[in-house]
Length: 67
Image (cartoon, helix red, strand yellow):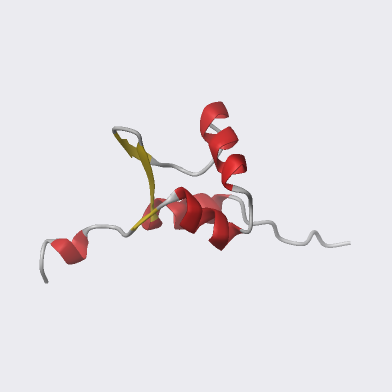
């Protein structure tokens, strides 16, 4: 296993907005309010680590309530 294979894949804002089917501006607003998925920033570039996205999505799973 190489060191590179241990690194998470980083998604751009555009890639994540396509995946989640939300506008890129929505992700920007979530970042401003600290309510969106975890991200890393290098200078002006914003990236979303795929492993953190999985955790973030799992935290938001909704299960139907029993009636």
